[in-house]
Length: 535
Image (cartoon, rainbow, N blue to C red):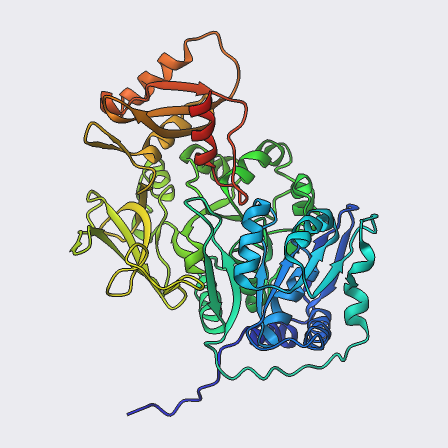
């Protein structure tokens, strides 16, 4: 027997309708390249989205066409987030940091023939255009800078200005695709993930849970993740559904602290390297950024020492998250439970450095091999596997394989983890990063975490390199806080020896000025390995 409830489809357009109808006076703030802030309210946003929907449809777009964007974090990109799914097409944000060869492969695979281009990327796009060719290219011009081949573009404002301000979507099936994002290529070549209206709507509702992002109507939210990276962690949708205001930093990350001060940001999200970079300025101006009360951190593990500074010195709550492009991306989030109130500060920090518990709607399990489910005891280490209404079931244009998905339909994350009795996940390492030395396993993540808490260390990365005797051996790559006459290598070895067995201690300590990063701010271990092996 079926129930008798209405079966209205969950579509992305409903989020903007709600924001405009209920929170129409709230604003989108965008930092422009000239340093000025562009502002308009949600009512204006919806009007422009409707115009953009009509304009894009007039190009002869068919349902399920993939429309690419080569755009930074701007209000125009936000408009595209809604307008393209609105007409039944699929928005495909291109990662501007990928190599030309990777971009060429992705664009060909996605069959993009219409693209929106930010003028700051116009020259970069020209190289791609020569290899691919597009039926239409629309230029978003926020700088009025001179660019080559400008006449080959349609002009964004002119493109939408003469179109009708009313648009009614005809989408009836919430399972229609609405966005295509590619993984960042941290492990292997980028793979496409095709989101549906339903999956993104449900993800949006889940992350707005009080114990997840916890956004409210009184918040001002700034995603510091690029809008091409998993739809900016879904924050542009979550912000609008909650009625909060949205702040977009364009391409200027040097002005982040000023932007927090000027717009009154209360919640911000980004990878640990972003927060580490801006921490000195945030400390020196902590009385000016007193509106900021919460940061959401993901992409990599945030060191305990950094969490402690943000929470104790700046009074900013850190919410540690874990997820994947394949999960839209949020899978777990770390907050203390009421039962932890009597814990010591040290115990609380150890919990906050974990990746947290699954958010509502996400199921997790630990597997040893393909059949043995491991207990949640905080000790057993296995592969973390997940499933949810917003987790991918196959990669774009690729049949599911047992390498990525189990026979019973769970996603194999490739992360090794423990789960304690309260459901808190602790990532131990990537399966591909675990070092096998003399038949024993060495966790690079645990070594990095221990090194990062030493006062002389700003950043630490551990990699495995081939070794004739042991198979693999660890090497530590370190960014030091300052130069020292002390034997820092022996000091760090002793620091690790207090926690780990002798065979875990890296054979070499390499000191560098900067750790290479991927396009989304994660540590680029492949680049480090190449550098070490060729040095």
